[in-house]
Length: 207
Picture 1 (tube, helix red, strand yellow):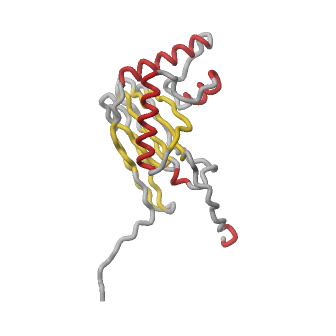
Picture 2 (cartoon, helix red, strand yellow; picture 1 turned 60 degrees about the vertical axis):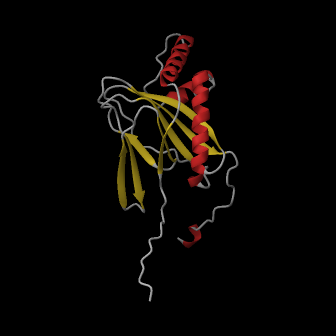
Picture 3 (cartoon, helix red, strand yellow; picture 1 turned 180 degrees about the vertical axis):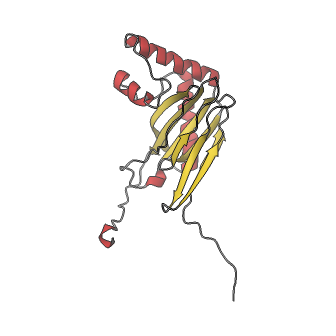
């Protein structure tokens, strides 16, 4: 009799870490320049560079829901897309891309980027690229829940140039930025160029 015990994975969830060769100084300059331009165009209205509403603000006020079309920003989007495509094992595209700056004392609450339109949720990814991470700034924390019973918090301390990729359905948040310096990150949501349209079985009749 074979008494070997084999572990069979039932919930494969991974967070992928890499680094990108981008010019962080130039990225910061382009993003802040874009923010100032929008501010002037809107007659001095406050631009929410430190809020998660960046993407909605830009979309509503300029018709653009992505980073500005500047050289280094475009280079970053290309590098991000290439890396995410490698992780996903298929060609991916950016659906949304925005910047987020946390000043001292600020944080981001728990959320995910899951959508009811994702018929096959494992095919959708989110990513974060860190432009500026001063010492003592906020960690990114993932909340992994299994069967609504076991919860595990996985904190990651970002570094300048770090690139993180994870499934969009994973809940995540940050703790507070305790640094006097701002923490700047570019985030994005990705979907397959050719999405899986295989019907998902409806098991509700057996409930």
